[in-house]
Length: 186
Image (cartoon, rainbow, N blue to C red; front, top):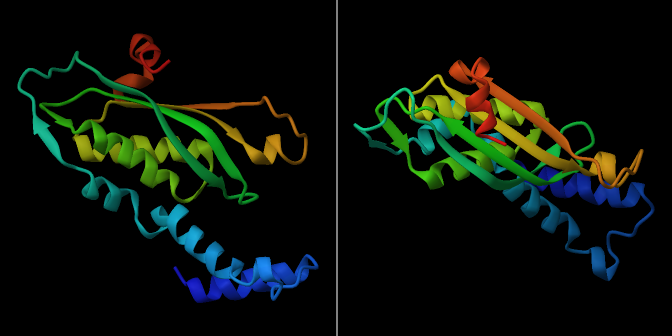
């Protein structure tokens, strides 16, 4: 990430909206924004495969069979909409997968969700990214992801519908056709 370029453009943005970038409260703003963007968009530096490799620590589970699902609910993340660079917030992610002889560490699932969200995103793509990463990291084709969240491009601008929520569901493998598995994510 080119933080110097970000600082330059944020300074220009401040000028374009009629602000004085040399004003006391704004002098450090370009640097703060560059640092913030480096943090909240950290996931842009990694492909889904890279993230799967980073968080692929698994544990052998001989008792895991094709009928046992692991489900983690209410993982909180936030992201930024690629259309308006607006905050997607109050997002909760539920992930389910069917282990194939090995299970992911539970914290790895939350870390995968967090890192995939640290990109300019669409909620629909975020669900797909999480599902693909979990599938690769856990070595299973059977993954379901449900995301519910608020989008400031809907709540703070435009229509300004503050109570609206967006729900997306991504199903891979057995989750595509098994209604009971899908219900575990709700």
